[in-house]
Image (cartoon, one colour):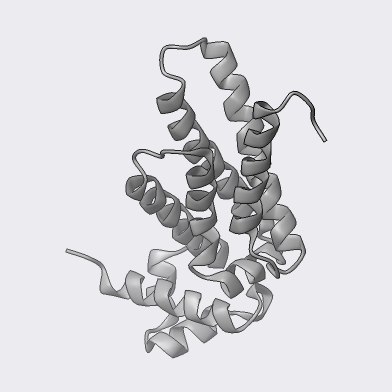
Length: 179
């Protein structure tokens, strides 16, 4: 049976995070909005960072479950981007907080998962060492593009940018000269 108090705490926290920076959210804000007492919050969570980590970890697991296979590198990037797009303002608030490391750690996990899911399928039966290098390279590229996009305030369409970069890369492979 689902725990409705935990669900209410998480939903309230995300709603508050959409409206204000992480360092301006308190346990008091959450319990008052939820209509529960502080002891109920602390029964479920040690503190706000523990709550944040559980929410992000659950989102990562859901994303992985939603994407058991991935058909292209572009799709792997879009899947990783889904991790961020569901709650853009909340993510920016987390990213610009002291809890950035938690977000970055899980984002790297997401990037590794989506890239390796694609590469394991696309390069099945090929040299494992080469696959590992490709996973590492594309995982870092995916992570770097998302971090760069966050650093610029999520102002551009990073998915279109990434798709265009991969289309250009394919064009380079088809021509004899690189620009």
